[in-house]
Length: 75
Image (tube, rainbow, N blue to C red):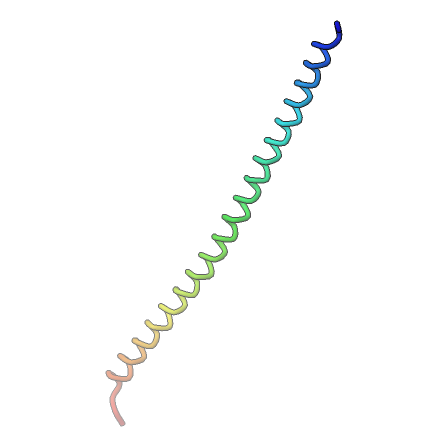
């Protein structure tokens, strides 16, 4: 009977340590998932912005070609 409170305390400390470890691992997993998601979003945004920039450059180029052909003397 004298060892019962000590054993219960040891079990409680062991359980607490185990749960804190699980919580820490969950936080690490959450951080890793967040970083991966942010990277994926950044890649998508980068591709979209490059596509938009390319489309704008093509539109400007076509507009300039139209202006050039309108200004150029006819033969």
